[in-house]
Image (cartoon, rainbow, N blue to C red; front, side, top):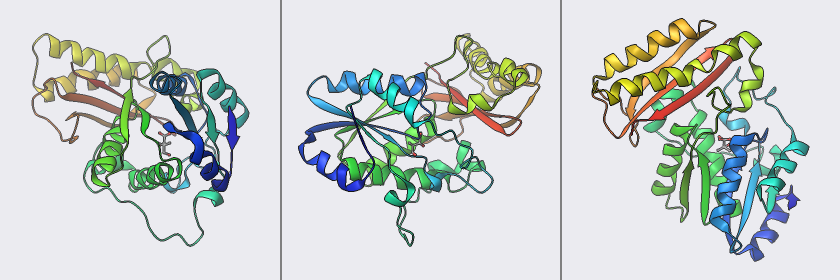
Length: 280
Ligand code: PAF
Protein backbone atom coordinates (compact mmCIF):
# COMPACT_ATOMS: atom_id res chain seq x y z
CA UNK A 1 0.00 0.00 0.00
CA UNK A 2 1.29 3.44 -0.84
CA UNK A 3 0.62 6.78 0.87
CA UNK A 4 0.29 9.90 -1.27
CA UNK A 5 -0.13 13.42 0.08
CA UNK A 6 0.23 15.66 -2.96
CA UNK A 7 -2.28 16.14 -5.75
CA UNK A 8 0.57 15.93 -8.27
CA UNK A 9 1.53 12.46 -6.93
CA UNK A 10 -2.11 11.37 -7.08
CA UNK A 11 -2.42 12.50 -10.72
CA UNK A 12 0.60 10.45 -11.62
CA UNK A 13 -0.71 7.39 -9.75
CA UNK A 14 -4.08 7.71 -11.50
CA UNK A 15 -2.52 7.51 -14.96
CA UNK A 16 -1.53 3.89 -14.51
CA UNK A 17 -4.04 2.72 -11.88
CA UNK A 18 -6.66 1.25 -14.25
CA UNK A 19 -10.03 0.65 -12.58
CA UNK A 20 -10.34 2.35 -9.20
CA UNK A 21 -12.75 1.78 -6.32
CA UNK A 22 -12.78 4.70 -3.90
CA UNK A 23 -13.51 4.81 -0.17
CA UNK A 24 -13.63 8.45 0.99
CA UNK A 25 -13.10 8.91 4.74
CA UNK A 26 -12.14 11.53 7.28
CA UNK A 27 -9.75 9.12 8.99
CA UNK A 28 -10.02 8.02 12.64
CA UNK A 29 -10.76 4.69 11.01
CA UNK A 30 -12.65 2.01 12.94
CA UNK A 31 -14.20 -1.32 12.01
CA UNK A 32 -17.00 0.47 10.18
CA UNK A 33 -14.50 2.01 7.77
CA UNK A 34 -12.71 -1.35 7.70
CA UNK A 35 -15.91 -2.91 6.33
CA UNK A 36 -16.08 -0.23 3.60
CA UNK A 37 -12.49 -0.88 2.55
CA UNK A 38 -13.04 -4.66 2.61
CA UNK A 39 -16.14 -4.26 0.45
CA UNK A 40 -14.12 -2.13 -1.98
CA UNK A 41 -11.46 -4.86 -2.02
CA UNK A 42 -14.13 -7.49 -2.69
CA UNK A 43 -15.54 -5.44 -5.56
CA UNK A 44 -12.07 -4.77 -6.94
CA UNK A 45 -10.72 -8.31 -6.74
CA UNK A 46 -7.36 -8.15 -8.45
CA UNK A 47 -8.85 -6.29 -11.40
CA UNK A 48 -8.96 -2.85 -9.79
CA UNK A 49 -7.17 -0.66 -7.26
CA UNK A 50 -8.69 0.26 -3.90
CA UNK A 51 -8.11 3.94 -3.07
CA UNK A 52 -8.87 5.34 0.39
CA UNK A 53 -8.89 9.07 1.00
CA UNK A 54 -8.31 10.49 4.48
CA UNK A 55 -9.22 14.14 4.72
CA UNK A 56 -10.92 16.03 7.54
CA UNK A 57 -12.90 18.40 5.39
CA UNK A 58 -13.22 21.83 7.02
CA UNK A 59 -16.09 22.77 4.70
CA UNK A 60 -18.51 20.30 6.26
CA UNK A 61 -18.03 21.49 9.85
CA UNK A 62 -20.17 24.39 11.02
CA UNK A 63 -19.01 27.10 13.46
CA UNK A 64 -18.75 25.55 16.93
CA UNK A 65 -18.64 21.99 15.56
CA UNK A 66 -15.76 19.61 16.29
CA UNK A 67 -13.38 20.31 13.36
CA UNK A 68 -10.44 21.15 15.65
CA UNK A 69 -10.96 18.28 18.04
CA UNK A 70 -11.88 15.74 15.35
CA UNK A 71 -9.46 12.82 15.92
CA UNK A 72 -6.49 12.65 13.56
CA UNK A 73 -4.80 9.24 13.76
CA UNK A 74 -2.93 8.78 10.46
CA UNK A 75 -0.50 6.08 11.64
CA UNK A 76 -3.27 3.83 12.97
CA UNK A 77 -5.42 4.60 9.92
CA UNK A 78 -2.67 3.43 7.58
CA UNK A 79 -2.39 0.14 9.47
CA UNK A 80 -6.16 -0.41 9.14
CA UNK A 81 -6.13 0.58 5.47
CA UNK A 82 -3.35 -1.89 4.80
CA UNK A 83 -4.94 -4.76 6.73
CA UNK A 84 -8.31 -4.26 5.00
CA UNK A 85 -6.82 -4.36 1.53
CA UNK A 86 -6.30 -0.76 0.38
CA UNK A 87 -3.76 -0.24 -2.40
CA UNK A 88 -3.36 3.51 -2.02
CA UNK A 89 -4.16 6.08 0.66
CA UNK A 90 -4.43 9.74 -0.29
CA UNK A 91 -4.10 11.95 2.79
CA UNK A 92 -3.63 15.57 1.69
CA UNK A 93 -3.26 18.75 3.74
CA UNK A 94 -6.13 21.26 3.58
CA UNK A 95 -4.00 23.63 1.48
CA UNK A 96 -3.50 20.86 -1.08
CA UNK A 97 -7.26 20.52 -1.55
CA UNK A 98 -8.59 24.07 -1.21
CA UNK A 99 -7.18 27.22 -2.78
CA UNK A 100 -7.29 30.14 -0.34
CA UNK A 101 -9.46 32.15 -2.71
CA UNK A 102 -11.69 29.28 -3.80
CA UNK A 103 -15.07 30.59 -4.97
CA UNK A 104 -16.99 27.63 -6.39
CA UNK A 105 -18.92 25.00 -4.47
CA UNK A 106 -21.64 22.39 -4.88
CA UNK A 107 -25.01 23.16 -3.27
CA UNK A 108 -27.75 20.63 -2.54
CA UNK A 109 -31.17 22.17 -2.07
CA UNK A 110 -33.61 19.39 -1.34
CA UNK A 111 -32.42 16.33 0.53
CA UNK A 112 -30.20 18.33 2.85
CA UNK A 113 -33.06 20.36 4.34
CA UNK A 114 -34.20 17.54 6.63
CA UNK A 115 -32.72 15.18 9.25
CA UNK A 116 -29.08 16.10 9.99
CA UNK A 117 -29.16 18.93 7.45
CA UNK A 118 -31.85 20.77 9.43
CA UNK A 119 -29.51 21.34 12.39
CA UNK A 120 -26.28 21.47 10.33
CA UNK A 121 -26.85 24.13 7.66
CA UNK A 122 -24.20 23.96 4.94
CA UNK A 123 -22.89 20.57 6.09
CA UNK A 124 -24.03 18.63 3.04
CA UNK A 125 -22.88 21.37 0.67
CA UNK A 126 -19.44 20.88 2.24
CA UNK A 127 -19.76 17.11 1.80
CA UNK A 128 -20.91 17.44 -1.84
CA UNK A 129 -18.11 19.87 -2.64
CA UNK A 130 -15.35 17.70 -1.21
CA UNK A 131 -16.77 14.46 -2.61
CA UNK A 132 -17.03 16.04 -6.08
CA UNK A 133 -13.40 17.13 -5.75
CA UNK A 134 -12.30 13.69 -4.54
CA UNK A 135 -14.19 12.11 -7.46
CA UNK A 136 -12.40 14.44 -9.87
CA UNK A 137 -9.03 13.81 -8.26
CA UNK A 138 -9.22 10.02 -8.03
CA UNK A 139 -11.59 9.41 -10.97
CA UNK A 140 -13.01 6.22 -9.51
CA UNK A 141 -15.21 3.77 -11.39
CA UNK A 142 -17.06 2.89 -8.19
CA UNK A 143 -17.21 4.36 -4.68
CA UNK A 144 -18.28 2.92 -1.34
CA UNK A 145 -20.12 4.75 1.47
CA UNK A 146 -21.64 3.61 4.75
CA UNK A 147 -25.38 3.40 5.40
CA UNK A 148 -24.87 4.81 8.88
CA UNK A 149 -24.76 8.22 7.21
CA UNK A 150 -27.86 7.36 5.24
CA UNK A 151 -28.69 10.92 4.31
CA UNK A 152 -25.15 11.44 3.04
CA UNK A 153 -25.47 8.29 0.92
CA UNK A 154 -28.79 9.49 -0.56
CA UNK A 155 -27.27 12.90 -1.30
CA UNK A 156 -24.19 11.39 -2.93
CA UNK A 157 -26.39 9.24 -5.17
CA UNK A 158 -28.16 12.48 -6.15
CA UNK A 159 -24.82 14.27 -6.69
CA UNK A 160 -23.68 11.50 -9.04
CA UNK A 161 -26.98 11.57 -10.92
CA UNK A 162 -27.32 15.34 -11.15
CA UNK A 163 -23.70 16.09 -12.08
CA UNK A 164 -23.30 12.99 -14.30
CA UNK A 165 -20.35 11.43 -12.54
CA UNK A 166 -19.79 8.05 -14.27
CA UNK A 167 -19.42 6.32 -10.89
CA UNK A 168 -21.36 3.40 -9.38
CA UNK A 169 -22.18 4.08 -5.70
CA UNK A 170 -22.38 1.23 -3.18
CA UNK A 171 -23.95 1.46 0.29
CA UNK A 172 -22.57 -0.78 3.05
CA UNK A 173 -24.40 -1.92 6.21
CA UNK A 174 -23.54 -0.23 9.50
CA UNK A 175 -21.03 -2.05 11.69
CA UNK A 176 -22.02 -2.19 15.36
CA UNK A 177 -20.47 -2.75 18.77
CA UNK A 178 -21.64 -5.99 20.45
CA UNK A 179 -24.34 -4.01 22.31
CA UNK A 180 -25.72 -2.59 19.05
CA UNK A 181 -24.23 0.91 19.16
CA UNK A 182 -23.30 1.98 15.63
CA UNK A 183 -19.55 2.43 15.28
CA UNK A 184 -18.58 6.07 15.00
CA UNK A 185 -15.43 8.11 15.42
CA UNK A 186 -17.46 10.24 17.82
CA UNK A 187 -18.26 7.39 20.26
CA UNK A 188 -14.94 8.10 21.96
CA UNK A 189 -16.31 11.43 23.21
CA UNK A 190 -18.97 9.69 25.37
CA UNK A 191 -18.49 9.44 29.13
CA UNK A 192 -19.20 6.00 30.69
CA UNK A 193 -22.79 6.85 31.61
CA UNK A 194 -23.57 8.20 28.15
CA UNK A 195 -21.84 5.20 26.56
CA UNK A 196 -23.97 2.81 28.60
CA UNK A 197 -27.16 4.53 27.41
CA UNK A 198 -26.16 5.06 23.77
CA UNK A 199 -27.28 1.57 22.57
CA UNK A 200 -30.85 2.75 23.31
CA UNK A 201 -30.79 4.44 19.89
CA UNK A 202 -30.60 1.11 18.13
CA UNK A 203 -33.05 -0.53 20.54
CA UNK A 204 -35.65 2.21 20.02
CA UNK A 205 -35.48 1.77 16.25
CA UNK A 206 -35.76 -2.01 16.56
CA UNK A 207 -38.78 -1.65 18.84
CA UNK A 208 -40.59 0.55 16.31
CA UNK A 209 -39.62 -1.81 13.52
CA UNK A 210 -41.03 -4.75 15.45
CA UNK A 211 -44.37 -2.94 15.89
CA UNK A 212 -44.42 -2.29 12.15
CA UNK A 213 -43.89 -6.00 11.55
CA UNK A 214 -46.84 -6.66 13.83
CA UNK A 215 -49.02 -4.46 11.65
CA UNK A 216 -48.67 -0.97 13.09
CA UNK A 217 -48.18 1.34 10.06
CA UNK A 218 -49.09 4.71 11.53
CA UNK A 219 -45.86 6.66 11.65
CA UNK A 220 -47.00 8.91 14.54
CA UNK A 221 -47.52 5.83 16.67
CA UNK A 222 -44.27 4.19 15.56
CA UNK A 223 -42.35 7.37 16.34
CA UNK A 224 -44.04 7.62 19.72
CA UNK A 225 -42.97 4.07 20.55
CA UNK A 226 -39.33 4.86 19.71
CA UNK A 227 -39.42 8.26 21.43
CA UNK A 228 -40.89 6.93 24.69
CA UNK A 229 -38.19 4.27 24.79
CA UNK A 230 -35.45 6.83 24.22
CA UNK A 231 -36.85 9.17 26.84
CA UNK A 232 -36.63 6.45 29.47
CA UNK A 233 -33.42 4.70 28.34
CA UNK A 234 -31.25 7.51 26.96
CA UNK A 235 -31.83 9.87 29.87
CA UNK A 236 -28.39 11.45 29.60
CA UNK A 237 -29.26 12.64 26.11
CA UNK A 238 -31.82 14.75 24.31
CA UNK A 239 -33.45 14.52 20.93
CA UNK A 240 -32.19 16.29 17.85
CA UNK A 241 -34.60 14.46 15.56
CA UNK A 242 -36.51 11.22 15.25
CA UNK A 243 -38.19 10.82 11.85
CA UNK A 244 -39.78 8.33 9.54
CA UNK A 245 -38.99 9.17 5.91
CA UNK A 246 -38.88 7.48 2.54
CA UNK A 247 -35.43 6.26 1.58
CA UNK A 248 -34.98 8.20 -1.64
CA UNK A 249 -36.54 11.63 -1.20
CA UNK A 250 -36.15 11.59 2.60
CA UNK A 251 -39.65 13.04 2.89
CA UNK A 252 -41.68 12.42 6.06
CA UNK A 253 -44.23 9.62 5.72
CA UNK A 254 -47.54 9.29 7.51
CA UNK A 255 -47.64 5.54 6.89
CA UNK A 256 -44.61 3.26 7.18
CA UNK A 257 -43.95 0.94 4.26
CA UNK A 258 -41.15 -1.17 2.79
CA UNK A 259 -39.39 1.97 1.51
CA UNK A 260 -39.31 3.62 4.95
CA UNK A 261 -36.31 4.66 6.98
CA UNK A 262 -36.51 5.54 10.65
CA UNK A 263 -33.66 7.85 11.54
CA UNK A 264 -32.56 9.30 14.85
CA UNK A 265 -30.06 11.88 16.07
CA UNK A 266 -29.55 12.21 19.81
CA UNK A 267 -27.31 14.57 21.75
CA UNK A 268 -25.20 13.17 24.58
CA UNK A 269 -23.59 16.27 26.04
CA UNK A 270 -21.75 17.87 23.14
CA UNK A 271 -21.73 14.64 21.15
CA UNK A 272 -24.41 14.01 18.60
CA UNK A 273 -24.96 10.37 17.65
CA UNK A 274 -26.99 9.17 14.68
CA UNK A 275 -28.47 5.86 13.67
CA UNK A 276 -31.15 4.59 11.29
CA UNK A 277 -33.07 1.49 10.31
CA UNK A 278 -34.44 0.48 6.92
CA UNK A 279 -37.93 -1.01 7.23
CA UNK A 280 -37.85 -4.27 5.33
O1 PAF B 1 -18.50 10.26 5.70
C1 PAF B 1 -17.44 10.89 5.78
O2 PAF B 1 -16.47 10.48 6.41
C2 PAF B 1 -17.32 12.24 5.09
O3 PAF B 1 -18.50 12.96 5.16
C3 PAF B 1 -16.83 12.15 3.63
C4 PAF B 1 -17.82 11.39 2.75
C5 PAF B 1 -15.48 11.45 3.59
C6 PAF B 1 -16.67 13.55 3.03
O4 PAF B 1 -15.75 14.30 3.77
